[in-house]
Length: 146
Image 1: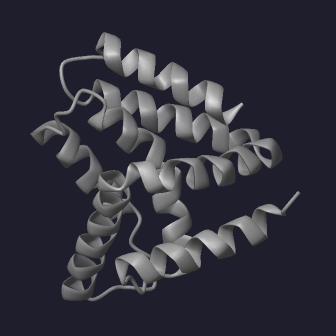
Image 2: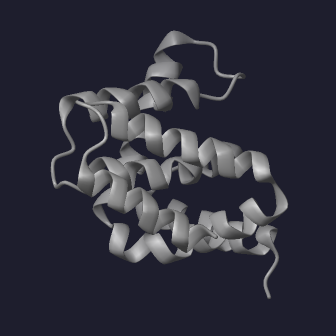
């Protein structure tokens, strides 16, 4: 079985190549951790204004601390948001690969599991509470990640 580090390095290179991003590994790792929440947001086929706002806030929080010029921060937020949306739009291509990595990480760090769970529930609650389809999607993701 491949190590988590090897799985991530391969995925990092694939995402960078496909999305033309130059984000560092730590930032892309954080984006990957948000992927289950993005799946939840889009499960009803309507990635609405509140969910976009939630993703924007997440994107702002993922800007590396060493970026401290406002214009560079804004560009980094835009790139994080763009890569996140690209992964979501192409979820059929990325879901198994990303979930494989997350599953491996969760096995090594229970805190990661709680963080991912919290982000999924936060995204589902972003607009009008958790719907039936969102609840079903969260349960499906939980099963895939265990």
